[in-house]
Amino acid sequence: MSTTPTGPAALLHRIGFPAELSLGLLAVVVFVIGDGIEAVWITDYLHHDIGYTVAQASMTVTAYGVVVAVAAFLSGALCDAIGPRRVMEIGLVSFLVFDALFITVGLHAGSLPLLLLVYGLRGFGYPMLAYGFLTWMMMVTPPQRQSSASGWFWFAFSLGMQIIGSYLSSLLLPRAGAVPTLWAGFTLAAVGGALTLAFLRRHPSASATKGISVGASLASAASVVWRHPKVGIGGIVKVINLAGQYGLQAFYIVYLHAVHGMPLELAILEFTIFGVVAVVGDVVWGILGDRIGWRNTLQWAATPICALSLVYLYAVPNLVGPDFWLIALGMAAIGIGLSAHVPTTPLVMAHARGETGNALAILNLGAGLGAFVGPAVVTLLVGPAGFRGVALALAGLYVISFVLLFALKLPGNARVLHSAAALPLGDGDDEGDREKDHERDHERDCERDCERDCERDRGHSDPVPAHTTLSIGAPVA
Image 1 (cartoon, one colour):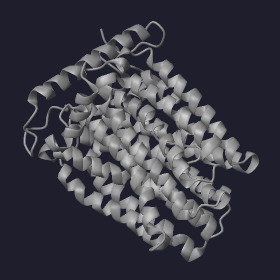
Image 2 (image 1 turned 120 degrees about the vertical axis):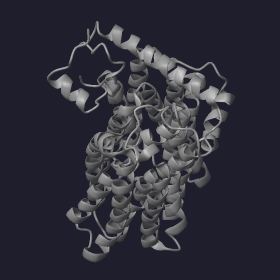
Image 3 (image 1 turned 60 degrees about the vertical axis):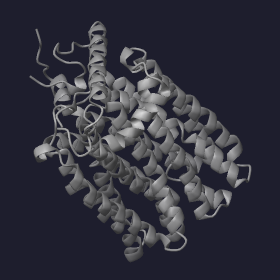
Image 4 (image 1 turned 90 degrees about the horizontal axis):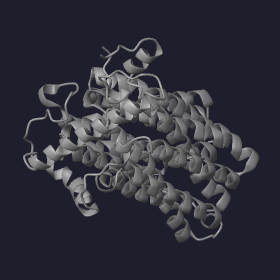
């Protein structure tokens, strides 16, 4: 007999909060605080304190982005072969090794190639752990609730990296200096990563595989972009989504601090404001995306807001100087625009027709490439075109994204789909039916695993309605 949740439990169901995954999400928050503690100030630090040029400092972040892109793809592609938990273990160990090398060797060796190597390889860790968790989360979430679920993941991610991480940096940097701040990040990442892996021990589905080889898993993930071309288009939209954020991080602190004289602590605090707005927006847009439509949210809210905000953020310091509150208004606006990209995940997964792991491999690759493309735009344009050229180029990317989204309409121009298998064959998607059947069988297996998790957890926590698999996707009766 099923029960209808009441009180706070009913509210959590209505907003799609993944109650059974809350401890795992909290652990991810702690990990990304440590991983991204330097994100908004590392370019300025390498330029002003270590002595590299702005282009060299941006090149370092670009190298990081290249590795992030590769790891992001692998975080989804390898889950079918070795399981999400093993993917996350590799990510944690990798991050800790190369972060320690970056702090102890890379920063002080005076060698740009060595810095590029160790800081770049440091980028292998966080996508494998954080995006590996997202991949597993989407595998166990019904399609009609995936926008809300992905919103809560990006809430956790933004809370750690953009709010707490940047705010903690603004407190530690002036008092302790850059290196102790980096060691504090190392410690937090170690604790958060360990807690994430400990949490996953309770969920057998996190260790499930399809019994296929690593090579077959990688080939299947790569080929999805021509078997389902709209997945590839969605991947480009994801690249642009994150390129604006990482590009802004690569140049805006330097622009405010070195060019317009804003104190470094205030420049970093601007990113904290951005993060606060983005983290709330991740949840709000996740819910709205399920109601007003995934593509509608991306095309008519996310892309225009991001493009206009980037132009505004460049123009305001030139017109009125480094006015904290006017710049904060622009940072809040781009936080709204970037968080409105949350429905990208369910939209692209819908066009993959049940190939969850493969779709997420492309989405994760897009997120990783965004960490490369954004700083690369800065590196290529800051010399010949200046900061104006950088800002306009990043804004122009969102115009491209707006146009691409016309190709991602769902059948009948539906706002959302309630089944990943609901898309008709066509548009180059007429191959691999047996493989898709296998994918859907795997999804059902994962749901059964998660139901067993929930049955076991009922002995240790509040009851979960009997008709649910995970509360992420639980309908409210």
